[in-house]
Amino acid sequence: MEFTAEQIAGLLNGEVFGFSGATVTTLAKIEEGHPGALSFLSNPKYEEYIYSTESSICIVNKSFSPSKLLPETLTLIKVDDAYQCFAKLLELYAQMNKKTPEIETPSFVSESANIATEVYIGAFSYIGKHVKVAEGVQIFPNCYVGDNVSIGKGTVLHPGVSVYHDCVIGENCIIHAGTVIGADGFGFAPDANGVFHKVPQIGNVVVEDDVEIGSNTTIDRATMGSTRIKKGVKIDNLCQIAHNVEIGYNSALAAQVGVAGSAKIGERVMVGGQAGISGHLHIADDTKIVAQSGIPSTVKKPETLMGSPGIPLEDFKKSYFGFRKLPFILNKLQELEKKIKALTQNNEPN
Image 1: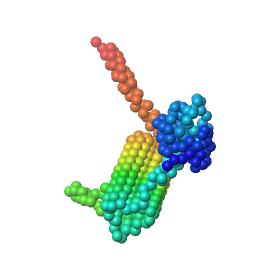
Image 2: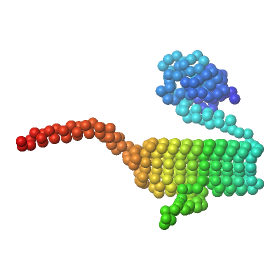
Image 3: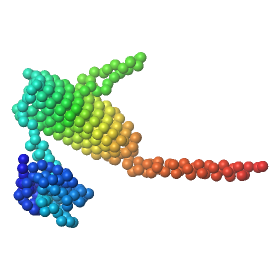
Image 4: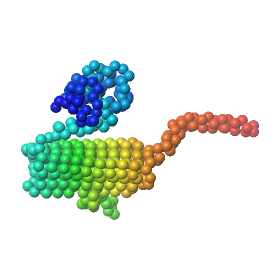
């Protein structure tokens, strides 16, 4: 679709500087701009590109003041927050590319499933018995939705998502390709001979509203009760969430984070990539965990943790400074040992 600078400014409550009739049909990064593209500038590090970009329109902060001549073909739209406004446009763009409601063939939808209107179900998908799919849901090809699953309004399941039986997915969630929700938790009990026997996992997974889950992430069902991902949580690709875990409101987990069974993560917690969190502990609200850290015990107050085991960030920095000096300290120690040995030998009686 084609939009003018004037129309875009109206959507964003912005002000046009340049040709209000300038049109765009696509989006592009400012450094890769081309005629007919809309870009944005919010990070000063990228300012140099605005003086050479070929984009037709660029969204900038109201505080932006060019230090050089701008391209004659470039129209600016000044807004309060360029990043937030561009994100809003991306969301509108995604909505315009929404799939047309239909049930493609071949696919299997159980006769007992309750499928609302305005739903898209892609080819080769399986919808089990007594499944409830609310209005506006998009289920892309090759998805599996097990018996008794409930999917809330406006949720999107990208290709190859598997949702096991009895799980609950809230409204306006986005679940990316290859993610598995509701597989068995890792529950085994050894007998007297050390042979492991499976402990049945009879709970489920509850994903609340406005959650986004990245590709190839796994969220295991509870042994009993529910593994619960609360409203507004954002989980990156390749994360492992074990059985009976609870992740609090608006927390965010980066790629390859692992959370062991029955851990309770508080609200607004941020976890960096490849961090590991042990089971049966609590993480305080507003805690920040730096990438590749290991958290072996309960965190009682909000702080930034780094290292394995995780310690307060400032303590880690001091420890790391000492660690980097170890080769120098060892060399000095060896020199002192040699001097002491020489002094000892010189003072020995003949």
